[in-house]
Image (cartoon, rainbow, N blue to C red; front, top):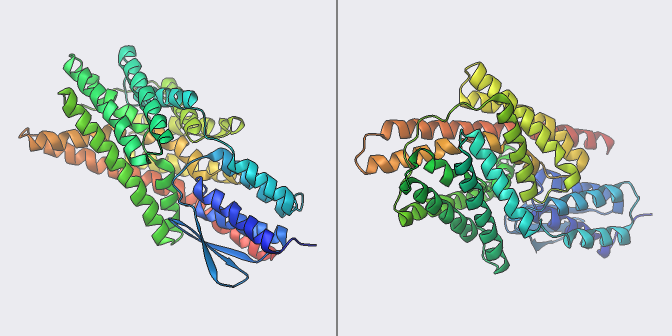
Length: 411
């Protein structure tokens, strides 16, 4: 006997709101709604938009449930998906589902101290990957990122939004990088600024946006990407203003030094673990993005450094491997693919190229003849980012189609 009725309708809508607002992909949110419909004998549909969800009960009029997808809390998502599967399999009734959803909603993000430490370890690991091997410079990177993480959490407590949070943290990174150059260490100044800024990049909204665009959910996909892009603009502005305050500027760097294979893989694993913590991934699940991220970056090192592939080709191959490996894992473990997927590929984001391009454009504006190099770095950055997005998004999109066809056959 089913639990259809007003209570079931409200529970399905509540589950969808929690998933949508905390980083789950749109495809998995819609699949969760279908599973709850079967478990509760309900007929509810949701239409996700940026600002929330339109909920339609049994073909009736739609009601709007506000739930902007601007937060990342994979603890909540994992707990909700566990409750969804329990309801689908008839192990949870409506009362059990209601209790599970309220428990999930009460789950906090990772604590401030651990968040700040993860910012420090993640930025230092990225520094190693980008070729920064000087211990003193790595300590400066870690300290700057730690202070940025504390600043972000302090602003969040004051209910100040993401754009201001990342701007302030990037401002600190810009000041640190500028001072590092002024103090006579210009060769590492760029990475002292760039690496703390890299942990500010809003990867899951950008990746979920790419998934939505591939699924032709155009308005939501564009909204997610615009949200992430404005955050990137805030980071860039913060870096630039911080550099100006410190009286320094980012030099146009020569290509980063080659990092040994074993150290590259170790740093990639540390970066994946750090970003998993930033996204509040349950501890028991961190192993997956760490292992996949480290192995994928080892593959990336092999094809780029060993075989001479271009950065874009190497990024496409390795992100396809990451997507193919993590898509079934994310479904089985009930965690948002965008979170673990971004954690696994973050080490391949060409942060040094992005900021070399920016510094080259600044140099050209000042009359220094470095525009050609800046354009080359900008093109490289664009191609690598596109390759990463497509490579990670395609396997999970294909898996979504396969799962949808299986569900259709069962129905």
